[in-house]
Image 1 (spheres, rainbow over the protein chains, first blue to last red):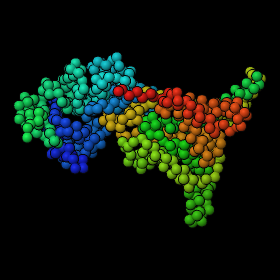
Image 2 (image 1 turned 30 degrees about the horizontal axis):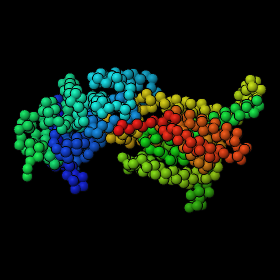
Image 3 (image 1 turned 135 degrees about the vertical axis):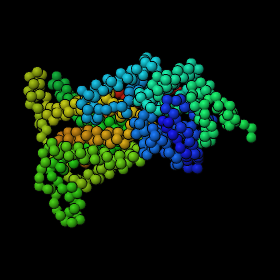
Image 4 (image 1 turned 30 degrees about the vertical axis):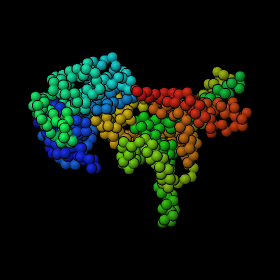
Length: 253
Length: 327
């Protein structure tokens, strides 16, 4: 198991966002988290990448219990993410945004960068080359110099995915990567997610509302409702799980 | 003709004053560009850096007045003097220490707060540093002398006299300040634009959460940025101090950096330089031309009015980033 979430509870004042949630993430799989609005999916992702610290429960990553919960350290351990409402660096070009994704891999220290010539310069070129691969892969060559604030929504999502990929993550967290996209854009995004998973072997956790997408690409699915985990299994099982159907479609009480 | 050459000389002197404004403005830009905070205390940091440099160099006893009042020590000097280079390095160390303290005691507690809150915090900080500097080194006007070139440059005078038949009076110190500013700006621009370090800083200014998610430590970045601003403050403090003595009016002169920033744009290093030069030349030239007619002392307000007029046409400044929101 790459990651285990054990008995995680998260409260904001009186609001219980996560209630004793446990599940695991196997290496190399695509793990979907689904559930109605307000089910706690994004909170779960925020716990995994360290933005939130659960009051109870532990996160085990690569067989070790997580001790400190600093988000920038967790990013350094190979966990990258995208955001539900896109969090790009608006003032920068697409290229610079993706280059930022490589920050955790930068080896030249402060003084070397100040000097620039020599190691820092060579390293910059190395990073640039890797980033150009990502740009090719995501088919965004044409917009690499465009300030991201000016890009349409779908492309912004793609740049954000690029930034997350740039860190060559072990675990990639995608918070509604296809929200607000038309069918064509969704298909592209699905293809990218599958390619990343297959070619790079990246483990992916994604939150998604489009059930069709989830059933197509996910290996296993976690279903949440009101902060609780109500089902966990392969898509075929989940589709026929009565609890899930009730929670998702709403049931007459 | 004579009049024209005289105007040219006035402009030239304006340029050199402008360079000094730019140096102060640069500190504001650094912090604003890379952490989104408008640091009101930058001007006082210039003063504090200069005070500390002079104090260390002359071997002043820190808190001498306080000790005297409490214990009647009456010792104001240790009786040694430090080499300028050593004093500069020590001062730089103290500016870094100040940066660390600012992060620990103030910024850390204000992550994700609205910019106006951070702005208010820096106003408080400004007056604290001003009072603290006073307490630490005493409030009398001090002479700053670390062996920089001073006096009128005879080379320039002789050269211009030969060419135009009119010798320009340019202070050597001003020429030196121009050189220092050029080097500093060149380095900062390159660093911010082309290195991963620069990207890190811009990332933090743009979005705290996204910055964290790509592995940036906000605290480290803030310490770095404030240290860099402290360094720029020290450079500006040396230049201003050598020119007009180290005194508390320095922190007021530093406020001239505000119209410079409005003109040049708050996020642009280029803007700080060009804005400084425009304001420097503009106010000198305006005073020269219109001063006799409307009764002098236009230098106090001209810069602000110019910036105000400019805002009407280009609110983001000459080189500032125009934020276009997609709706």
